[in-house]
Image 1: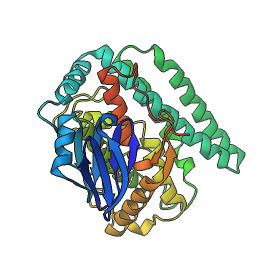
Image 2: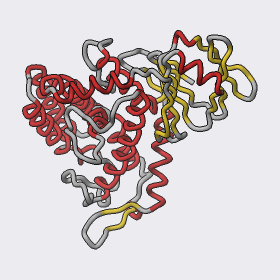
Image 3: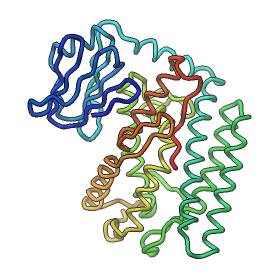
Image 4: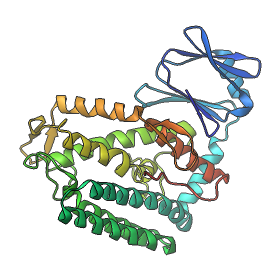
Amino acid sequence: MKHLLNTLYITTQGSYVARDGETLVIRVDHEIKARFPVLQLAGMVCFGQVSVSPPALGLCAENGIGVAYLSDQGRFIARVNGPVSGNVLLRREQYRRADNPEASCAIAKMALIGKIVNCRNVLMRAARERDDAAGRAILTSAAKSLSRTVRSLPEIKDLDTLRGKEGEASANYFAVFDHLIRCNKDDFFFRERSRRPPLDNVNSLLSFVYTLLVHDMVSALESVGLDPAVGFLHRDRPGRPSLALDLMEELRPALADRLVLSLINRQQAQGKGFERTETGGVLMTSETRKTILVSWQERKQEEITHPFIGDKMKVGLIPFVQAQLLARHLRGDLEAYPPFFWK
């Protein structure tokens, strides 16, 4: 379990949450593991096999503490709130900001700063690990280009210009993505980003891991009471989780791209694990999907120190913390949305 931003995340399977006066008590195998006065909490997120007693739920409801239930894999299941909830006020503010181009640009800009800085850091780390001067120079040059793009963002006031800068940065990043692939270049090479369908093995991996990431981001947004469908950079479209796509932008390089590159460079992904369809698209075999899912879950169990709040946490909690930070910004507790910066 982890207490972050006044939200209690319970990930230990078999945990039982009970009430003791004005305190929530967490037991595992009948042994008390922690106590949390309700005055310290604003929310509780339960992953997997976590039970909450009716008195504990009642205490949470009385004190305006939302309780979110997710599967052990992070899929959103349900959220329990008391009769008076702040979620409607939070969502109304989200919708007001989304309808205001200037306000939308301010939030979208911060998310894109996080994305481009993280792309730059991926390239710089790879450049430091290169033995050949030519490859190192190519990656360093692209990283410097991304740095220039980041420096130009603060002055931008409209979404169209911001999207143009995002497209420019993405083009520069993916133009050198093939230089990040060090093994088995016959089976794993990158020419350009392709989707629906992916046209090569690398794009197939990227698309699948991006899907896993957006799934986690949707659950995170639901857990804090935000509407995943109403975004700031990505506009409304039926069936599209636009806000989840907004916030996953800054996490793609650090969580998704690095995992794909690790799978390839450590030769955990093999060329025989992909199949080409009659239409030219590339699909993964069930064994490859299993390998990715296992690696994704293992990655989410690793610990990092969050650069903004300074607390140690599992990587899998990053989307939930970012969703909570956005909610705090919309409520007026934070002057600006702080993106996640990977170092």
